[in-house]
Image (cartoon, rainbow, N blue to C red; front, side, top):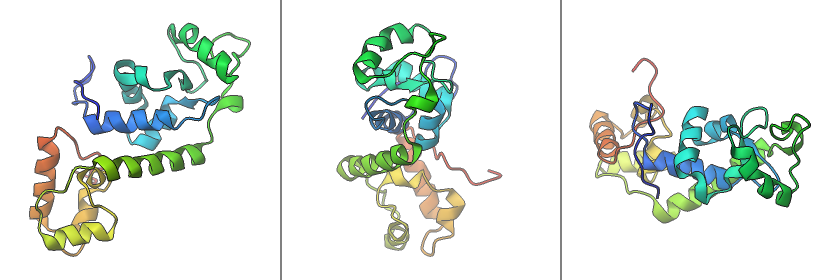
Length: 193
């Protein structure tokens, strides 16, 4: 799992699980294809700027040259560094010289998300964080919706989990405490909270 601290200018902590999800999404972009920061943000559950920050800090060990802006432009001086990779993968630069044509090289979004979900399930199955001791009824209720490890908890709103028979405020507090202890945030918030 990745480790790190928040990039300059970010007020929220950068949690390791978010970094891992973004990098995992990048690893699913097929050879010869690209994905926009926004595509990856939607899949991994964050913002395009956060994806950019994660790529800047942690992206050297994944195919970073496949991540571009919404118009196919890598930005900054990245195109000159990406060019050898693009040439090798058959990605051509558009006539304005700034990047590639998204219409020609954008990864299939449905396949990318499916591949990401499959890879995430495998990763969590191998490396997931056990749920804290929230009691058998709450544990069984979470399992009924496919939540068996802590990383899966943050993909559901608190009120959604509270609505499950067997999950009460104490279980939610214990889950939130464990997430906080690990430096993670509950990314799906209950509206109005």
